[in-house]
Length: 189
Image (cartoon, rainbow, N blue to C red; front, top):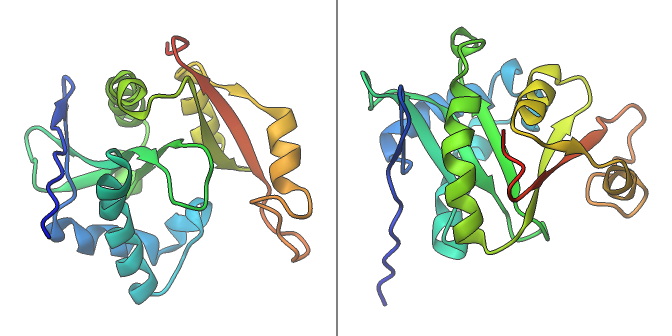
């Protein structure tokens, strides 16, 4: 049996948004094993990071959409981060997500530029009218991005997701609270 998946290449003024490649794995794993990954469940072991990288690529096969690797047009082989739709099989709703792998790329508008290109494409492919962004409490940079993209805080869904039995409930004292920001088709700024 053979599976063929077409992953488009999207472009912005400064970025190319492309399929993940094996050569991107080292940069991704260095990020996920570092303290920088605190808002995405890290740091984790190198073997866990390797499985995560493979699962991101696998979502394209399972769902027909997933995370793009973003790179500067001037250096398309060096990944800046992952941008797009995160939708593992355990989540009911798709999530618009973004991650810059290196702090030197922060504050340059790469995330909003990438997501403003991806979101219109994603609505057509996903076939839904809303999506979430899961943002750990304290991650003010991602909150600013969500707001800039037109998302609004979903207090009701945040309470449900963090309550006992919810998808983000943490039995440990002081575990991170995940806030849900809601994107609506047509609300992109």
